[in-house]
Image (cartoon, rainbow, N blue to C red):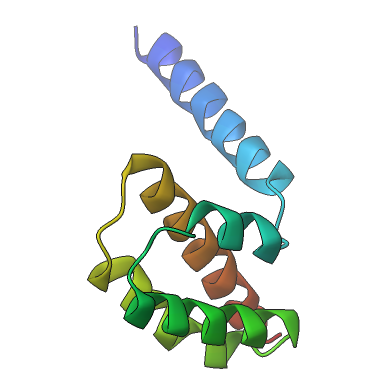
Length: 98
C-alpha cells in the first residue's frame, strides 16, 4: 500500500513539474489587451502602463500597476484567469532577474 501511494505521489509530482516546465513564459500583451477592453478607464490606464513596461522588458515596473488592475477591476472569470496568468509570468521574470 505504501509503495503504491509513493508511486502515485511521484507520478503526480513529475506531471506537475512537466506542465510547469512546458508553460509559455512569455507574456502576450496583445492577448491581454484584447481580453481586458471592457474594464474601467482608471484600470485601463494602469493596464496600459503595465503592458508598456512588459513590452520594454521592465517587469519589476510592470508588476505594481498590473496588480492594481488584478485586484481593483471588476473582472469576469476569463479576464481574471488571463490577468492572474500574466501576473504569474511577470513574477517569474522578476524572479529570474529579467
